[in-house]
Length: 404
Image 1 (cartoon, one colour):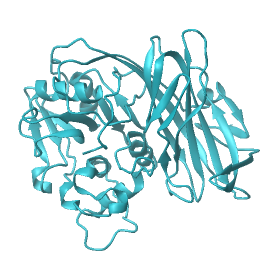
Image 2 (cartoon, one colour; image 1 turned 180 degrees about the horizontal axis):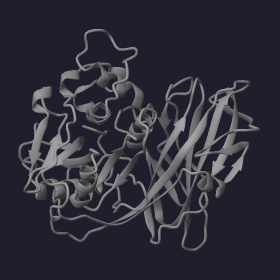
Image 3 (cartoon, helix red, strand yellow; image 1 turned 45 degrees about the horizontal axis):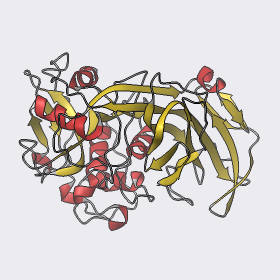
């Protein structure tokens, strides 16, 4: 599985708006009827430029070109440790519909023992403003405070479910707040380069299969890695095998860009040790797994020169635009027995794989990490079948990792 079994199917669905978009936090149960969901409403808002960050409110931070960083931080205690903190709060974002879920995504630099804290709040149609809910504490180094999410916090207008904020009732606007933290007395250059969130709402109207477009006949040379050859590896990071479809997919896309970081803390002799390394770097200690969507893209953002974010798409036609531009997509699906012809596993309640291209007839070419060996990872799936499963399971969720 890409993600842990879900306790509910998230009410999310989205077309791409602005530069990015995102996904729901809890994994989706295998759909019994993959034609019952559609994703017509989504709005992603993100901030990344000087003008963007200037439009927000900052405390203890200074503006730079495409970032905010420490200026005059104030004391803060986190997990019993003394930190210096500065905070940036976004303007209110208005999606134009009543959103039922928000998924934040960010790009940050966290050297040494620095970190960032991501919080979300919503506002209802009646003008009522909810409390700030902490979604995650994140750092690339994972010390001394472990990378984690905070599921729960069920109060007023919403609650947190791993990497997604779920509205109790639909909200008409939202804010994100990012706190930059570094140990007291340090000079660590912690900074925020980009933050945003996707707002979405589901619909239940079935839709026809999308018509093939500019991606047909294009297959990108993405390397093939099998998650299954890592079965039993590193129980402290999920144990490999079926649990590692997300980091395996992330490692494949990074490898496509020629990015293969030297594995650290990985025993000698592991095949494709970069997969073990990626699992370590994206592991979420809050829900105890490697399938946190935003943690995967936040890690990738520290390595690529372009954008890295989670999004949702209305159909495979939108995915084709990325393939035509040379950008593979990591997508989240789920399926029951006999629902995905040619799949290397019979069923999954949450699985990630890489769309690497399209056949001339529009069928989907993927790197499915559930293949038993690297040689069995490349697959072709029927377009209509795959699209229905993708939309039904996750509302068209995808990681977009783009190198400059």
